[in-house]
Image 1: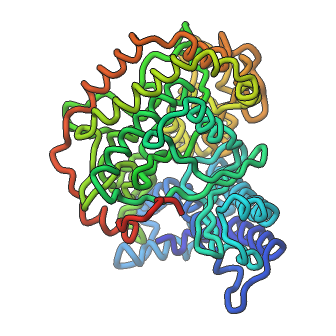
Image 2: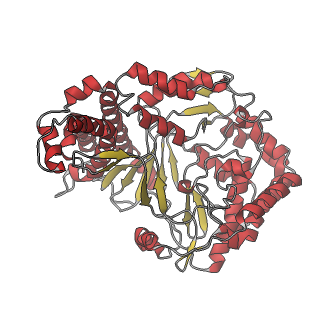
Image 3: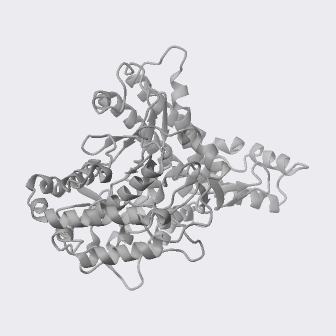
Length: 542
């Protein structure tokens, strides 16, 4: 419920809608009886929610001040809330005067968000032939373009860039990603170099690379049809884990893996070829934990993980950094930052209405894991001598994770608080104070970039050339930031791979994945949200 407070961002939202409607009208004709606005409703609603979330803290603060001063008329909390707006206690002009950080944020969020979506729409129109060739869209569906356009709830990066989901005319879903997607191809090309048997081969998602951006088909969750499929799923998870280890992947949280029948599909590979030398003097892989696909067992939650793709079970979620109003529409409205929610649980295989966690299939996982390491040792000379493959690796840029996204999100919420939103310089100083390290470190060279991104309501985003030692922010490059290149690290992973490391990691997996969860049944919410996806399909891919 936003109601009257929507006036605080109505102008920004209207301008954003105009940008979106223009992009759709210029790119695709509207089908008879389907106004362009219908296709954009989800995008418009997503922008409105983000704008409303941004103003909530200062609205609640101003309401409290007015109520405590006895400045509101009305017999009920609802009437006093309505009086607050009727008396003009907080208007767009007052917001800009009192809370310039929030007012500027509304403009940035709306304008850059709309620009990102509009850019994606125009690129879809230009790239539809490639999507047809890749099998992502079906023939004879081109004229009218997508049925709907929705920005995915991913973080904003580098000037408002974020993932955009399109439901195509055929009903298929495709994701526009404003980052290079070559890493997905490289991951699967490396797995192909190992020439594993069919039961261990990873399935490639269809990807269209367009340099600085790309398109990826939806990896649609599907249950397993048999116990044999479950076994093959976990064996392939072992393969995926080992490949991610060797290629320095580091973002394997549960939202980045989809169980497509007997195939685990990694849907976000932008942190492949991570440079570890910023935190590890040797610049070398230390543990499978570095991938994020697995984590240390939690003694308080046996068999369950907090974030790792192989261990999170079920769709219940605790959102801790999402502004949520309590008493919305009343003069006692407050804002909290924690709520319970539920999302479709797609990261673990399901058979006959029950999750199939790693604990029951540890031997299969270890079989796939060891197979990669054994085959890599057998073929290492040929792999390292494959100049064409390594030239493509060397040409890549990879996202570098510097700090946890949750910490950046916490700072974004901080900047929206009344105590800080009154001064851009003041909030910039506070952000810098919270980012700088007391003892001083190489991190401190990045603080100005981080503050600049946060003030633009973006999560700071860094990339590095895989063959070099520089680190690149959105508008600046830090030369020689790393001790060595990710390319040399990955080649060393392969060149120096020995049985000792493989055995140590197998022991870790046995220790931390062998405890079964107490309950593996899908909850009613899990079943409701997965819906018809619980019906087995031949591929699990859209």
